[in-house]
Image 1 (tube, rainbow, N blue to C red):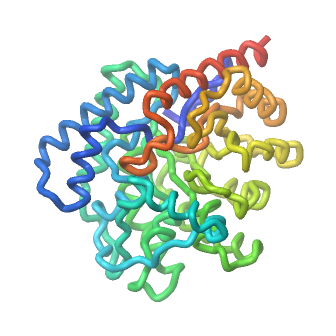
Image 2: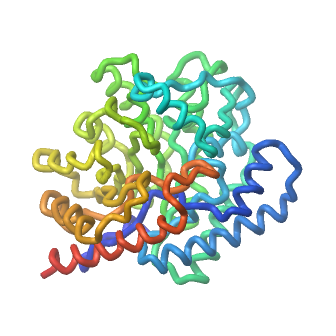
Length: 383
């Protein structure tokens, strides 16, 4: 299935991660902490969770569903279990917007999910170590789709750039050599997903959040240069893949914080447009980015691209009113055209295992509101 376009109504999707069942969270915490876990038991529980989560998405009215990332400790750190070369230490990250607000920084980093993240540095040559993990993900999602009759689906994978953000390098001679080595190693996973016919979402917080973490010391022009290199490395990794099967997720960091150092969308959108993908998902609902839809008065979207703005927040327990969701969709459609638009969520709802900024039961209600808002907007847009 390529990036599906609808000529009849606004389709819905989300960013990938969804709340994991409590018993699975306990198993995954144990595994991450190095406690003995029955591998077969964990594997079976993950497969069942994917099926449960696909059904919940369909019941909520989501058109393009995912596996909820339930097999992964997080969208980026899971790669430490799949690649060789990560046995070193990483530099701890400073979030520029939190530096000014130390007590908020403590709240963000003491989150039960984020505080457990493991990011060993790269201290050796990077190669693929576990070839089976992604094939299990594909099979789990394929089985869930058949059982639940979903239309279209995707699996997310970490971008070379976000891996370079979380995992420091002491092995490769320079940053460029490092990010391209990561890109080479990630080809296997990207191709395994797209070869199965499932859509691939590349998670690229490096293009936005990277500005106030990895590259906080640079000026905008130099940050943009680095971001261009990140996109080149990504395109290198995607070189054998039809862009119709790939979408990219831009993200300023899925944490509740001030976000006043976030780079404006207008500074990075043209760089994102250079990626070999057919869809771009980005935060457009939260109070730091909800105003940015007006950039599309000036910025024209290339014909081959679908935009997937977030029309519901992923950090707030408010259930957005379907009329507000419809308004967000309509004002975007007015600017880019209804057929280049899919309605999404700002970010994931289960970014780190054990993190639940939004209560799990509320997540499904928010997704149902998203579907209802898309229905209301579609009625107006296809009068």
